[in-house]
Image (cartoon, rainbow, N blue to C red; front, side, top):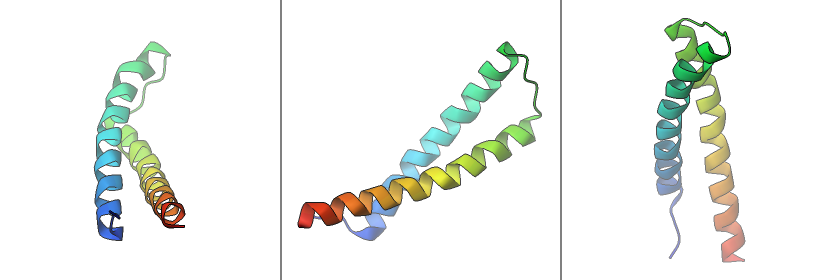
Length: 71
């Protein structure tokens, strides 16, 4: 059974959304421990930048593995 491109994108997006929430939550907890104090809006923006990269990475890797599986 193969996974459609749309479902690959849905899976990658769900994974990244959960990762985004965890990353921002960890930033809020961990940054102050290291003396880093950043406004919440900045933390959300930083998380969003990494989320975009992560979404593309997850989608591309899923499609590559799906292609290799069919060979």
